[in-house]
Length: 119
Image (cartoon, rainbow, N blue to C red; front, side):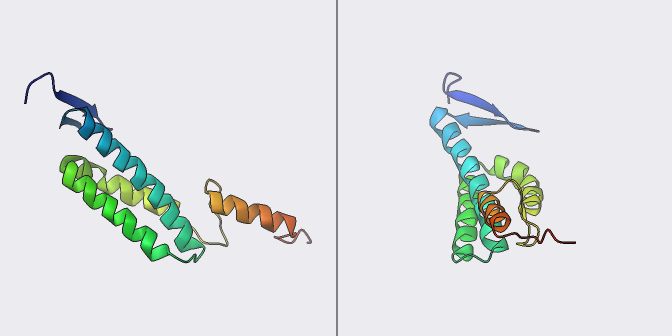
């Protein structure tokens, strides 16, 4: 590998070496997709939506792809993912204010007078 083809990517803690721009972009895309799937999986589970298992499986598949393409990044991010997934977990009774489905549910509930504004 020549020095011209090497590219370094800095994460929060560790520097990783990728062989070319395509590899870096692929892993960064997978990391972004993993985050989006984690958000979706939390919403599907919290609101008991059909397909929750499939969304979670997709998240696991993306994590496996990250591990295959960049095992060091997978290892470095694993504990962060666990913490993030715990932050995203919620129940329908305590909607997550940053999630799209929850925002929709809150708007619908406000339109129907929930929670009760009486007493």
